[in-house]
Amino acid sequence: MTRRALTRGALAVLAASGLIGLSLQSAGAAEKWSDVVAAAKKEGKVVFYHNITPKGIEPILKKFREAYPGIQTEHVRLGSSPLIQRFSAEFGAGRHLADVVITFTDDRIAKGMKAGWMLKWTPPELAQFPADVNRENLLFTLQYAREGIIYNKRLVKPADVPKEWTDLFDPKWKGKVGQNPTWRSVSVQQLIAYLRKKGIKDPAEALKANEVRLFNGSGGIIQAIIRGDIHIAHISDLPVNTAIADGAPVAIVYPKSGTTLSANQIFVAAKAPHPNAARVFVNWLMTKDGQTALQHFGGLSVTRKGMPPLSHLPATSALSNTVDGRTILTPALQKEIIEHWRKVFGVK
Image (cartoon, rainbow, N blue to C red; front, side, top):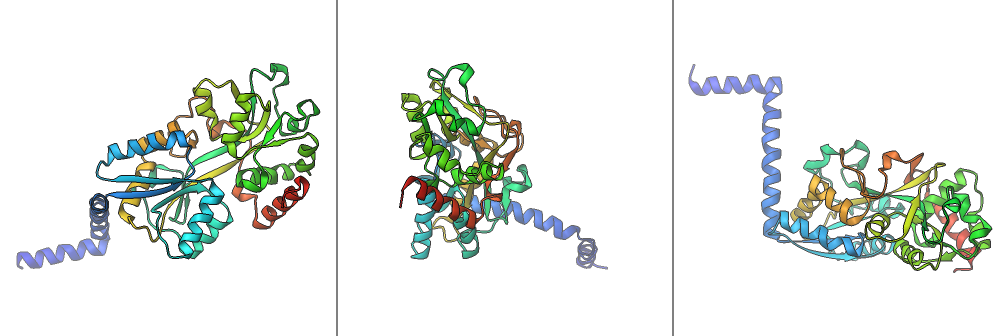
């Protein structure tokens, strides 16, 4: 038998055993990612739509550019709802400008999954994450915002520190309570759905009676708390860790009765103008260095296994009765909540 025949015979045995398939698959996977990185450097740019805090985004992007100096970054920051609306409009018009999108998701993202917004792929770093962060290899949860009650430590006595959601309705805080408008924020809508599930039937009427003051976004709320315009407020904890680290006189309570989590999810656009750079960027955000940068500069708890908690806030796993808000806010319930709150507060 010739050497060639022996080689063919050996290959046949390996193929029959399945070993050659695994071997070639592994080599191909490694080669493919190195090709992606090389192509990303040739593309030279990634365009990122996001909702990361203004103070945090530049340090995060700087860390990425240090890791991949051949890839420049451009970014657009918007609140989650207008961000989703913008991407949807651009996609529908055939204007494919964004490479990567990270946002708190709602039903429009689920519809976008079906409409072809997202590239289906498997980031090499995905193995380092819990299985539940992955939605069909299209969408990946990198961080969670947690709902809580923030207060000004200089204005709220220790004995008066709020402990539960119903404390927001206490008349002693009349005119001193703040909230992000429910019709503006999915995370607020998710909390309202949770409160209803807990038997708190009409927080809209209760908060209106307590003369709640409305501020746009968590950033607006925390600034109002720091100024003393309000004393306590419901807040998504996005800006809280950074504020405490900077010395702001604020603290946050996560009620023991439970709270909702808002998933900050990322995807590569299916028609990204820089598809390889997009994948390299997303995969870097999933590395230990990327997750550290997201948590440190972005202020939200990250999802990679083994990461430490935020510097001034507890880990998500340490909170009582957490519920992923997406699981309880159906499109029908979302519509009902928005319409009711608009009616109660006289907003068209």
